[in-house]
Image (cartoon, rainbow, N blue to C red; front, top):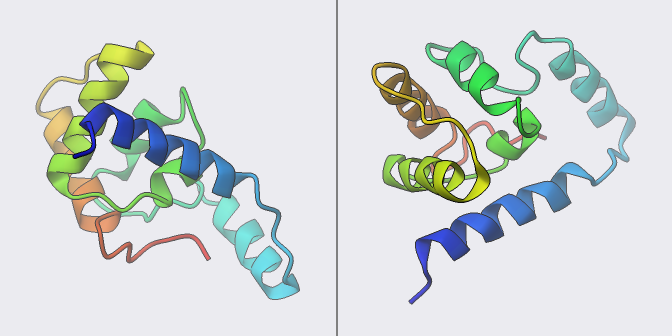
Length: 116
């Protein structure tokens, strides 16, 4: 059985590794430029994106968020881990719930908005 904090650390490390992979395909490079021109980078623009973006990119790229695929409980555990182990500020409700709703809807286990 894997410890939740170890799992969270591995997810973040994996996200960092993928974030460093250069885009090779010309069409994908164009898509990336268009995505990065968005105010919220590669994150899907929907209810909760603003709160998610500004609370998360203070410490890491929005690409790390977009590359994950977690349940709402998984995202919640990851936020707890970041507060306890990484020194992130605690996000209180209703903002926390809005962020978790956004992440669960757009960056869940199905990974419907995984960056291409």
